[in-house]
Length: 225
Image (cartoon, rainbow, N blue to C red; front, side, top):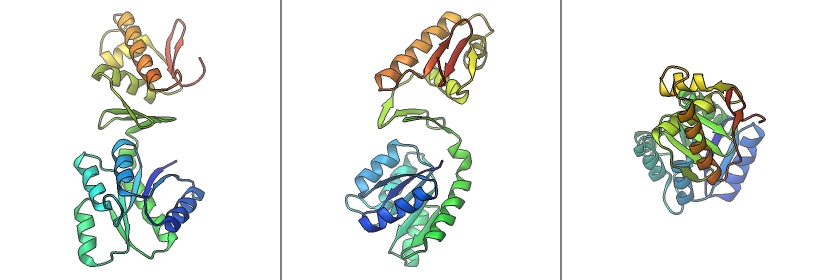
């Protein structure tokens, strides 16, 4: 399910778009001002941003500029009543992928979202999720709900490996080979210590235990212990 951020201050438009998008199967986070929009776009993983330009707090163009300055290439569609050519050029130059003047047909918005999602499919695959936990492989950030979890480089690589093998039982030998790049059998105690480090950090952030010990074999991310 693709996750969309909708930033639109007109309540009727926002509710209508959110309802329609959710009926199409999208997960939608909708906010009504630029400050909340910037916070969401800067701290949470999304597959596509849908931004109005004229917003209270800060405008959609500033949100987009901040997102791009932070290195995030999330596909972005600008929705606005400003339809002049120079306004479209400003939006596209700021990093928007598409620009849809109001009023517009909902079917056209859906089509443009699908195009943006196809463009961003490679990037989307680099964000791993488990409930409220997300791991951004490109920017090397781990977020639980709105809180960033501080991991060392090795802890990040370990969690990334486990999440990429979600539901699978991975042995200590596999972890030694693929994460530490060491011969099997040489890292057992170290791996157990790092598993404990990551578990504690996830649990302190409010996550139920996600990394299960499979006795005599190794570990499993998700699934039943």
